[in-house]
Image 1 (cartoon, rainbow, N blue to C red):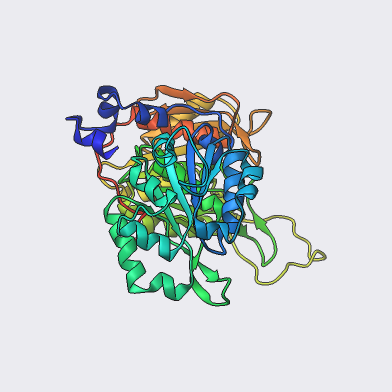
Image 2: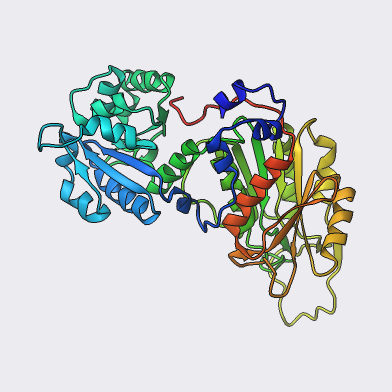
Length: 452
């Protein structure tokens, strides 16, 4: 994406898309029918390199996950890697070729060249301290090292080792050097290690590695942008047990947050109390948990200042009990009515903080007159885009995995009608259509998948 932007005089992403012949960027913004991010790996050519370390067992799960996603996989085991897991294990799990040496069997092609040219991305998981050191010095002493030297594909390094080894200045310097050369470094997780220590050095979860690989493979139309997403229902406490809320699951919002991250953004997502978290950590992806509508407003006010793209997909409660009772209201106490008071309109309240040039996207769920009501809210809330969906009936998006939505731009023009679609697909396609329609200024990518 950066090269694409450097080679054009376009002043916006929209102009870039119109003027460039960059096939990969256009493919990134093409509509999808995928039901999960991992399905976007289908037909991608992945070269997995497994080095010596106890975390090699996770690489087996990673390999299987890649195959299940539909990726084309080839595997290289280093000599150290074979001490922890056998080539046969990977052959059985993947049904694909596994290589261990440049010398162990005759080949018509030269593996370290042909495999290097074949790959769309190279993933080294786990990457041991020894292997990282050899890469930093440019060694080509084995099949894995030689293949990496010969490839022009992006390379994702996933370190895994003892905490002291990971934090040793030699390893730190080696990772910095690789990062400076363009390698992508996914920092190790922290926790209990196989050696019994607690600290940094765990291999990230396979889902985190797969998702990061996807982000690298896409040409980052949102690189350099900070995206803020709200997701799910809020809860308004009546007493210490009971509350008022709605049926929003937050799935659409969290899918939008992840899709924006996959497209290169630095993403923050503010989630209601019942929204499911991602379940694994990603660089430049932050989750915040809130409960009430006022909590949501307060958190959004803290984060909105540097926001380039706001996606208000949450379903905040419009009303709250006028008085909150401490403890539990006993059922034998007659309650003939519940006094309510209005909650603030989040978008209207936040508008005073909107940064110049920022793009704001709102959601509206309506039971009737969808387009008419949507256009009214588009103007009333001063939005750049509004996403309309159905509040009830067969087309209702609440609580399910599928949705049906319509997107209007600032002029009230319909730019996307999803039809019945899985929410992940709808989120991806929605963002793609907005990016095609919007005149976003060019940005230089925030380099966040690297050694800090």
